[in-house]
Image (tube, rainbow, N blue to C red; front, side, top):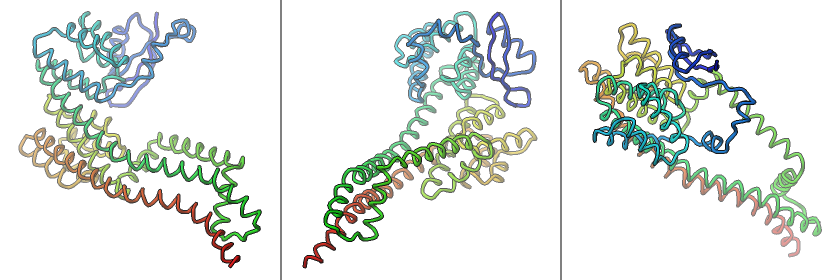
Length: 410
């Protein structure tokens, strides 16, 4: 009898991880449901010998491949067209899996098609593949199934994912230039320190030229980079990076760092606007699709991407549970912009919260686009100055002793 590793939540919303033995995944889910657990992920726990005997490079490639937002957006748009055209779910899933270029998504669609053919709901089948379809996606599909508007929901999902992908691309485009210039600057600096400065150092030694303090300092850096002591520096950097990652995995560390990110100069405002746009777009799409508000807030909390914002959303969820308003809880947390909270408050009063959320999302996505352009225009001259300063410092260190020698000759 196989054993399954289960990731689930209890009735209080607490995360649970358990192992259960059952004849089939369906029986395992039924047993857990009777215990009051809501299954989020269920994977068969295969032994090491079994895994090694069934080793396949195709499985390795599939495991290393990730399903991007763009992949899900394209699938959602195509699936919506097929459903709207009256194509059966199994047939539509088969067609899309055959032409899917992503091996992980292709395998998931094939398994989903098999489950649907056996009578399983589409949302329940997708829930078995959290690496491809997250809680947001599954919740909206489930709402579409219940309401009989699956094609409309898939179109909304496609629009939501396309907006998310566009937002991500804007941020990536803003970071590409400074990161590229930074890498080039560091590479040039290290290359000149390791290979060029030693040549001039030997010349200065042969000429017995007095070295200015700045030149001596740069030569010291060059010697350090060429010595075995640099290994300790690299090791220290690796240890610090690992320590940071471990600290960030803790709740306190995540809250501390995410709060710092929100207050960073230049980038803090961009992070806040991006998080606001994501919150409003996701929450609005879930509400418009008929997902219950508490479930929507829980999904938005889990997909916030920032622990401080996730805490604010969780406080709003608790406020709604006690009959309060979302806007009041968000206002107390002082995380979201005032304009966004006011618009949400108006939406609650008029009963058009999903419409207001979409308008706020549109506004802050435009704000993010403008902020990205402004940030890029600021970063370009800064990075040019940094690159010029790093290269110029090497040149100055090399030529200062030469100027001293020329003065001595005169």
